[in-house]
Length: 258
Image (spheres, rainbow, N blue to C red):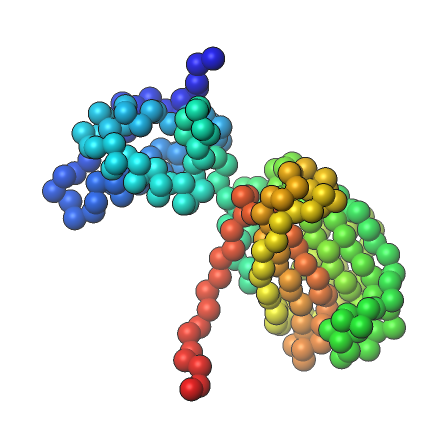
């Protein structure tokens, strides 16, 4: 069975041997530009063989391998033993200080949800500590699958004080982000987000929900959304399939006291 290539090797162009930019970096940049130009039309298709790339660019095989290693580290390609190198779907990049849905819309993606749970629960000791300042008699547990462009990318699990949750219509739970839900419930504005990021592997129940293999890597973002006076408005985790997702943020640097 013949492979379908993302682009012919004659589109690779030439490299500038007099440039201070290393040849492998120029090559990686050229291929990256082509992948981005072609977009979805390149996803799942093969790159030209290593020997062909070396011939077109006039470089050694080790230089080609170095360029491919750079593309692999960026998540732009994947290698299949015995078959070749293929273009992957770009990771979803998200600034964790912003609403995920807003960022996806700006990037022309569509976010949808499938509601798995919306129940009143009594807070566990850990949740009681998180919501101590909220003075809430109970919490609502929100659990839903999140998809981007009809492909499941993760699962969201939040706990919300009952007084706020009562202002969230069930229909809104199936289509709005947590930020929009809080606005809908007329909760106080979000002023602070406490975030902790960790990694784990998918157990069998989680793998079934996400449609992935057990043991696949996951990224877990635990966050507490707080109002202007620090009162918690929502707390929980969003678990993402690691191969589809990357975090992005900007922080101010300050030297810790000695």
